[in-house]
Length: 544
Length: 75
Image 1 (tube, rainbow over the protein chains, first blue to last red):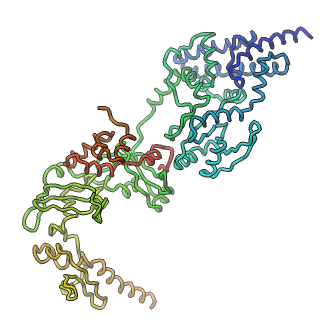
Image 2: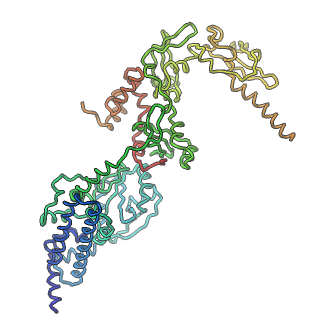
Image 3: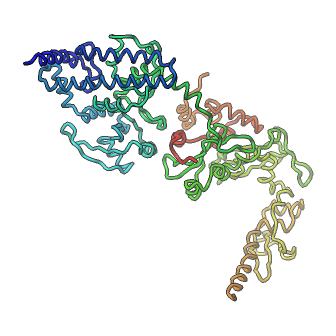
């Protein structure tokens, strides 16, 4: 044996104590560094020194200097890691390991990632039996056993059967960038989802470290808790430990509220990481807060209300799509979308303002002054002005009534109390205060109140003479009916008049014959008039 | 008086142990609802609260999806 070999063997024997100190055999970076051979310990000490300087001094540096310093820290870490890996390789090939270290190293060599991962899976599954566990591994997410089966059913993923520790295990996977697609699908399918961070082996960690491109990431290089403990006990106390750590969610995606927070290794190391990162993190947060600007509104209504977050989304428990937005930061109730509108929106042929116009028209209309709701509204009635004493909305609770469960308007005008089923459009107009109670009463109770204003909305097409309108009592059933005779173009059906319309026509005289005819058979008149015109066009084209 | 948790409120309402008015007044929408009543010249009542909820309340499931800003189609 040469002198060099003796020295080297001594060095490797020292290393044995270090390997004995490993709490996690998969993480060489976690051991008690004071047990390392002197050369490696010095390297470690040097690393800590420059890292400590970086942590305490960086805030005073120019950003360029800070970046440069971060590079130095990164390089020192990478070099130390390389040395550590070399020692590890030398040690296991030397055959001089102690029983304990040997056992640990054997555990390391015989415990591939997948076994560790399955242990994590079992632990997590015990805690969250109803959650689908997604494990991030490099650039993909993996899910196992019963979760893989669920993923297949819900997401249509293919299942692979692999042997882990001699046990056949179902695995399904998808690329990490598909998470945004698959996660909502799982959530919508009623699944709780946990995203778990895998325990990492030194090789993975090394690669991670080498991939680090800036100072912040260098500082965030994962450590186990034992590593952090070692740093604290053996060398200089870190300034960031003076403050209470501000824990961050290890890996949980903010967008899935039902997600169970990752409770794997991240749980253990979060505290240490948070402590170590605190200075940088808080600075980053401050910068982010300074830089964060309020979202620009997608539109501003005539009332000055700001529309933001306008978007389409698929309902959680259905295939239906909905449009929603925020108005002055308040979430609007989603409105079911017409498939044609959805398609147009997806193709960017419809904009948020257009969808707002379509699905929230009353939010965009000018509001009427509050005073219109606070003072009695007066309407010109057939026998003088009428005061609306009370107007409100309620849901019909009488199960015997055909309109049970529907929202209705209630109005009280003197002794006259009345209610009617309200249309969605009018309910929205009332809620959004874009129609006065007077206007709503006029529209919804105009017939009952025999208001001339109610009948003004009904008009027959031009050219219909008064003589063509027939309002008479039907001899067969004794009811008053209205019809229009269009000569060669035919006659409309006879339609029965309501009591109130008959009263308005003959008693209060607030409705004309033409208005009554237009109200009951106006549409039929228009279609009869249109039909011959269409025939004429057809014959004209045939002549050509 | 401390506010009742939202989930508990929903359960109480579903079990008809509280009415819509109590539900709204115990929820985060209390101020908005009272302002709406004031604007519309109506007394806060169970009917008004029920209508207010009908116009504003978003189902918990939809809320979960809506809150996910990365989900859906954005302009």
